[in-house]
Amino acid sequence: MSGRIVNYYDQSTECEGYFSMPESSNSAPLVLVAHTWKGRSEFEDGKVIALNNLGYAALSIDIFGGGINGSSTEENQALIEPFVQDRKLFRQRLISAVEFGKTIDGVDPSKIAFIGFCFGGLAAIELARSGYQLSGCVSFHGLLNQSDEPLQKVNTKLLVLHGDKDPMVSSDQILALQNEMTESKADWQFISYGNTYHAFTNPMANDIEMGTVYNHDSDMRSWAAMSNFLEEVFSNVNK
Image (cartoon, rainbow, N blue to C red; front, side, top):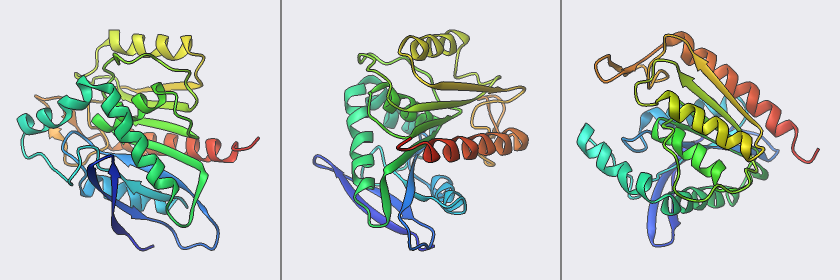
């Protein structure tokens, strides 16, 4: 495996991602990894390597552009706000990353999946809502804010992995998302992990007052659920 920084564009915005793939003579499925509200970091780049170990090429993307990282709650909130408020911009930034990923040598462009964490989890859901066609999208402890853009026919399978005690997601938002996906006739799954807070996959999350707490068991279970999901969606391509 040989990881490298890659630069790509969404119109005039230059984005800085991290790409790596397992050594193979065959073209590999690609999994894109969307970051938390902080921006692309070692956490997401580490998921790229973990996905390589499952046999997939992987690209951690840069939604904000310029490789920006927030350094406080206030900065992080300011970074995600333009995308939460403008879903057309949000969708376009995500689609640009996927389109770039399809052009990378060694990637099978017919087998593309997208996963994301926290704000990146919302990105995975928003990409599914856009109608863009992928093999699958996975949201880990994602925000579930409703979109003000029209829901298109969902053309990707969706897996949502959620902490039951996540204070950043209301029961109304959960129900609204489930109703939205059902009404669009999407192929969707929603798994809720008991006694589990927001950011449960991040070992650095330990702020009970904010509701961000690492949970080892839920981390392992959600990764296994994602692994099974990816194996399914990639094997079903062209069937």
